[in-house]
Length: 289
Image 1 (cartoon, helix red, strand yellow):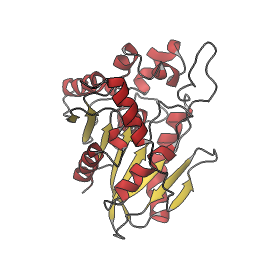
Image 2: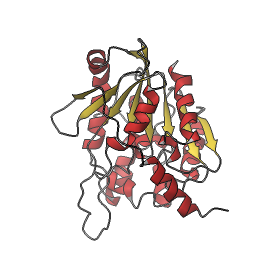
Image 3: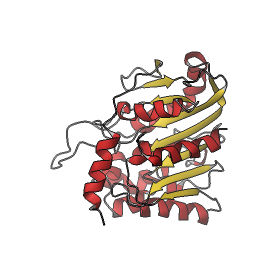
Image 4: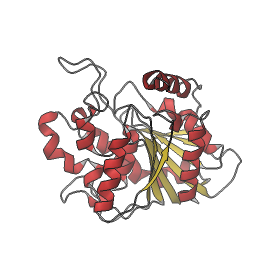
């Protein structure tokens, strides 16, 4: 049996080996340098095609930005989809005192940005990417971005008084979350991404108070078509995190589609050279079209 650590490293190297692909247009949605969205037109020149919104991963840490998923965005565009690749504010580069890793996320700015860009996207896309049919919008995200995609699709069930709460369900065809950090309690138990969940919420002392505003496993049911794609051998976000989310959805009376890929880890889901990426594109297309 292959060494899981070695395999994960090889899969990560493959996913990050592709050159970045420049967008067809970049548009700010706020004043901060990280408040920007890149648009990719469908490569076949089609019109009135679904819009796929991509939220990148990287444990909500500043070291990872949207550039690493531009090959994935281009992969989707080459399959005839319009794509919006979103940047958002993440954690600072300097570790917390006594820590060794950069801080994960900013509270509340990370959530502010995702809410703001999703609210602004229909108008932004109509101007920057006229090929996109914003009435057929699908959210997707990888890892920490998968969490944000699930969260963005659940804003209408946020607690009363939440600044990000919507009065009704967002206008989405659905969400396809890729190896998402979808259950915060389970992720904390497993110390996913080295304490990233606690850092995202502002510290361990804030976890219980802020979790109801941020944890997809508590924001159910949504009534939004939801699918999850997960590698069975993922060592970065283990399968049990997604399994816990799917179980929570079932208990809430909602069915979440789960595509579990054997002998696949964390990074092939966004690697255009991997078969898993084609599976992801098909899951997105099934909701989009």
